[in-house]
Structures are given as C-alpha cells and as structure tokens.
Length: 236
Length: 356
Ligand SMILES: Cc1ncc(C[n+]2csc(CCOP(=O)(O)OP(=O)(O)O)c2C)c(N)n1
Ligand code: SF4
Image 1 (spheres, rainbow over the protein chains, first blue to last red):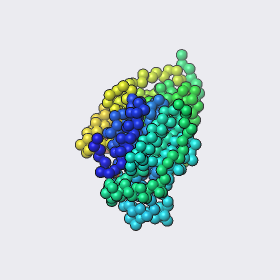
Image 2 (image 1 turned 180 degrees about the horizontal axis):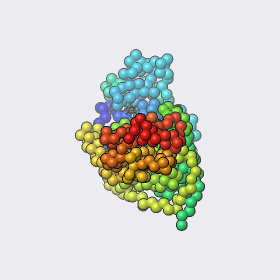
Image 3 (image 1 turned 180 degrees about the vertical axis):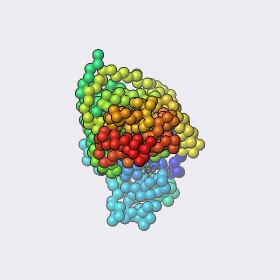
Image 4 (image 1 turned 90 degrees about the vertical axis):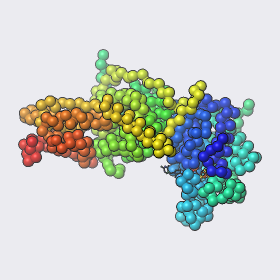
C-alpha cells in the first residue's frame, strides 16, 4: 500500500508489522489505536480499525481513557521520539507507572521529522539538525535520553524491548516483540512498549541506503537492541 | 417525597454526575475543588466506576478525550490554574466534537492567585480559552441544589450537541453546605453514540476520533459545521432567571454566588421603594443577549456585578448596544462584596451623580 511517508522511511514498514500482528492475534474487532503528532499523525488512514488522533505527547493519557472504558479492547499508541520523549515524557512515564494495560509503539528516528528536522531528546551527540546546526552539544542539550532503559525501571512496565527494522532478521525480531507486547496486554499484565529504531532519510539528509547504514553505525551502538524487561511467560 | 440532605457543593456535583450515569472521572487535586476529586475516588469504587488521579491536568483532560471518544459519559474537574492547563485538550475535544463535562470551581488569579472564590475565568470559559474557533456550553449555577441539577443537565447537553460543557462555579459555591434533594433529579437515558471508537465489534467502517483536517477546504467545512451547531445552541439553550425585571428601572446582572448577594441588595432597595430588578444568566454561553437587549428598551440602566475586573460586563454592553448606561461593580482576589456595598452602588446610580 502506498503511504504519504518519504522513500526509505521506516514508518510504513512499522505500520505493516503492527497491522499484521493485530490480524494474527485476531484482535482487529477490538483494537483501538491512538495516532500521535508527528509524521505518523495520519496513521489512522492505514489501519482498518477504530482510531484516535491525540494531541502532541498525550497519546498515553488518551489511551488510558479508552482502556478504562473498554477494558477488553486491545489499545495501542503509535508515537515518535519528539512526541514521546519530549513533550509527552510525563504521560508515558505515568502510563507505565500505573501499569496501564496498553501497548506503545515508539518510533525513534532521533529527530523531529514532521516539522522539518529539529533536534529531539534522542538526537545523538554531535548529530546535526536544524536546531543543532553545529551538532548536538552536550553542554547545551545534555545527553540523548534512553527511553527503554528508563521505562524498564518502572514496576508497572511489563515488557520493554528495543528493535530495528533495517534488515529482514531485525524485522522478524521486531514483529515478534510487537506480538509479545500485545499478548502481554491481552493477558492484562501491565504496560508494554516496543521502541523501534527508524530512519528519517529526508531530515538526516541521506539516501535511503545511506540512512540504513547510518542507523546501523550510529543509532544501534548508542541504543542497543534487545529485550530490557519481560515477564516470565505463561507456559502454554 | 422530597428528601433533603445537607451537602457540600463540590460533593453534590459528584453525586449528581453519578446519577447522570457518569462512570469515568479523571482529575487532579486543586483547591477549592479537591472535595469533588476525593468524593469521586470514594464513590466510583463503590459503584464499579472508574476514578483515575491523573499525573497532571493535561493528562486528566486527555483521559477524558479518550473516554468520551470511546463512548462514555466522562468528567473532569479543576480550578482556574488547572483549567488553563486543560485548554489544549478542551480545544481538541471541541474539534473532535466529543461530549464531556468539565467543572471549573474558580479561584483568584492571574497566576497562582489565591484559593478564594472568584469569577475571573469568565473570558476563558465563554470565549474559547484554547486555540481555534470553538465554544463550550457554559452553565453557572448559584446554589448547591442547582449545582446538582445542572451537573445532570450538563451531561445531557453535552451528549445532545456532542460538545464540551463547562460547569462554572466559584470557590464559595464549591465549599458551602446547603440542603439538597437528589431524589427528585430525573435523567434522560444515555443516547446511543454510533460515532464512538469502541473497537469495530462487527461494524465495517472504522470510527476515527480526530480534529485534524489537513485540506483547507475540509477544515473550513468542519468549522462552518461547528458554527452552525453553535448557532443552534444559541437559539435553543439560553437559560436565565429574571427577578423583578418587569417594572425595574435599574436591572442588575450577576451570575453564580454573586447573584445571591445582588439579590439581597435588590431586596434592600425594593424595601426603600427603588425599582430594581435582577437578571441572572444561567447559561453564560450562550449568553442571554436577546433578553438583555429587550430589557434595554424599558429599563433605564444596568449594573453588572462580578467577582472580577469586569468580564461579563462586556457581553452586557454588547447586548445593550449603547441604548442605556451599563455600570459595573466588581471585587477581585477573593474579596466578596457585601449586600450593603452593592446597595450603595444602586443608590449611587439611582440618586447620585451617575443618576438615572
Ligand atoms: C503542542 C504542539 N507543539 C508542537 C507541535 C509541532 N510538531 C508537530 S510534529 C512535531 C515533532 C514530531 O516528531 P516525532 O515525534 O519525533 O515524530 P516524527 O515526525 O519524527 O515521526 C512537532 C514538534 C504540535 N503539533 N503541537
Ligand atoms: S520526514 Fe522523516 S520520518 Fe517523516 S516521513 Fe519523511 S522520512 Fe519519514
């Protein structure tokens, strides 16, 4: 399916993985998604499920309201790093702290895509953006924030993983992680989040291929992939 | 049989909301409305409802956005500084046309201000408050009984028009205790909400709760639709109480707690043979502008009394449209005028320099 995303952008792939998981788990009839502000603001156009569009950063609060009305629904938020790690940092921390039974798909491309490439809290040190034209400087902006590691320390968070979709192996691991997150939500265990490292060729000023390489060589070393927290699975 | 019990204003709102079928409350403590948050925490767990103490007012209103969009009768409450934080969410709720009830038990401002009663959020409540061309229905009760009755009405109006309704009280109303009869409250059935995002549950077309319309033509169309809805509300939902206005030479205009003080002042003036009346807007938006413009044909002058520097008086002046003089008397910062103080203003206008 054609999307409005730029060539080489991973948002489209991530949408597809989430949609596949919803179908494989057979929860399409009870799924409710929350799109956030960012390039994925129109995500609701790509899923055949009920969806909300939430204000910048507020998706976890909106999802809380939804889940408290329909406790049997599978509720997820889809948020970028500007949305979740900057303006919405409070909402995500407290949704996790409450153990809100929702799943967050957190797309980390280390930049603000939609507004044209400004610095995000996840922007790497020395990374050039339109608001860090000389490279992100530690003295002025501090170190990039590692959200998965931070949320792993919160008791209400039951499943936290960081994945990437830059090659077929990682893609299949990403899908497994998304599936596990949704399953844990369905079991009513608590908050789940999958952080997905992603490209923004347009604002990184790179070709799709260069962007994929940059992700591997720069993002993954600072944001290691893996499962940070998982419950002991129920033996089937 | 009427069964009156003594209740605090804030608690009466909470119990009435439950009678109205509200099972989802999201709040954050702030004086002088905290009793409502506390009341909901106690009662919701008794009746299988949902109470969430949010991490902030910003989160609370967005939880309401989620719950209302999911089809529930949802409510939040706060006081002035907290309502300022909720404005982003209220704009989104108005844009997405979701029904919900927002209680503002006002305190003095600006900034952290005070915790004393005030009516200084009138502009914010009635003129939008958040960004964009939108209106809240704003209701202003003046007794504990009315706080309860109007809470129920608020949920009904919200559902009927798919619009946020703000119940605007002040610290005095929220804190005072009065006898109230909750057994007499009738509530309409909760209307069906085929537009709500509930999960498809067999439905074919997804429901999307949204305030984004990227194409200018579409956003203009949506705004025109909203304005038509507001026009309908303006024509159907104006509520007010008129006391002694038929023969009045001077008509006072006051709402909420201030209307009760003004009423005492009116009685003092009537006892002295002065023809003074009182118009009490119950809906602050839609504002009873037509009623006031009609009264301006016969009455000689108006006196608006508010706990502010003069906010509603601007709407009164617009309605009177220069036909008669409009005087203003206000106290600020949590100060309450005494009936005698207002009576003196009346005497001044009727016999003093500003004379009729
Ligand atoms: C309250 C508010 N502040 C700012 C904006 C402008 N804005 C839109 S998208 C965005 C950044 C989104 O970045 P991110 O979440 O990383 O998503 P991406 O576009 O990179 O996918 C900002 C700042 C807004 N819409 N609302
Ligand atoms: S700007 Fe970046 S994040 Fe947005 S669609 Fe284009 S590549 Fe993707």
